[in-house]
Structure formats: C-alpha cells, structure tokens
Image (cartoon, rainbow, N blue to C red; front, side, top):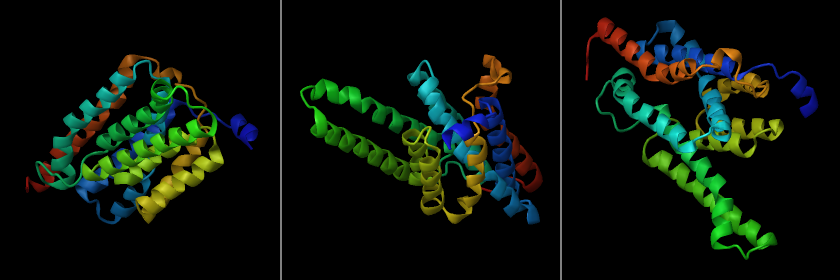
Length: 250
C-alpha cells in the first residue's frame, strides 16, 4: 500500500500551505462576519486547515535547522496575533477563555520536542539501563511529557484544547505510517474536538499525497515569512471589516 501511495505523492509543501491558508481564511471570514446561509458551509470547509497546519508543524520540526528559533517564531506570532484574534472572533480584549491556534501549535511543538529529547535524557541519567527496562522507562517518560502537554493546552485555553495536541502527536508518532496515522487523526478530531471535525478528514488527502518537497514557489525566505505573517494580517483585516460593518461592541 505504501509503495502504491508513494507513486501518487505529487503535493509539495507550498500547495499544502496554500490549501491551509485559503481554507483558514474562509473559516475565519465566516466566524468573524457571520455570513448568513453560507456560515455553516464555510465553517465546514475551514475544518480542513488545522490538520494541515499540524502536519506541517511536525514536518518543520524534523527539517528545521534551529528548533529554538522555530518555536520562538511561532510563539511570538501568537503574542502578536492574540489581540486581533480576541477582538475579531471573541468581541473582547482581553479574552481569556480561548487563545488562538498559534498557542496550540507552540505547545504541540514544545511537547514533541521534549518527547524527542527523552532518548538523550535517559542516556545521560540512566546510561546503564538496557533492554525492556530501558524501553519501559523511556515510554513512561514520553507519556508523561505528552500528558503534561495535554494538560497545558487545557489550562491555557488553547484553541482545540487537548484534541489539538493529540492531533500533533498523531502526526509525530505515526509519521510515514498512513493507515495508523489516519485512524489516530480521526480519533483526535472527532472524539476529542467534535463531530463537525469529520470534515477535517478531507485534509488527509493532500497530506497523504505529500511528496516531502518544498516546491520551487516556496524557495525564497520572503515567501516563507509571508505565510507566517499572513495569520495576524488576515485577522487584522477581518477586524477592520467587522468594525466597519457592525461597529465596535465589547
């Protein structure tokens, strides 16, 4: 099955990011402006974005040259975006009961980084451990880190909560295992976030067709940073449109 799938993998990173960006914009437009009869279809389309961003986060984790800068970049974007997010989607400033998706991605990235570091940590503090004993302790440490990440997402009111972290962990633990990954993604989305997330499974089509390439259109740093900056900028634009149409009501 993997061999057959590999022959069909024609989607590069640029097109994944573009699909996520477009569907996210559709979702946020509906959420911010309440587009009448179009509201629910637009929100359903918008479900596609989050799994793709989680997948790209994990791929970025494995390919980035500097994980510290990668984590810091996402966290700083979260801080910049949060005031616009609160005003646009929650009609309050500040709004403590829901933080934007970049906090979820920050916590998820930190969690998989710590999980990944457990091998090296155990080698330092328990170098004499071998065999089944070492494996048991290693997985206990990894599960503890995952549990702490899940708790942190709930305590901080990060968007999608523990379901979002489970989704990121699914892409980490079942990377390049398409059947197990699809099952884990389905469970994370539907059982831990909500049944409407069944529409998010559409995202698995381009994800499974990903060929591991960045694509020529994503070659320059300017394009890469444009994708990062789009998140706070598009929310700020929606905020201005919303205030122009409906006024400011806090």
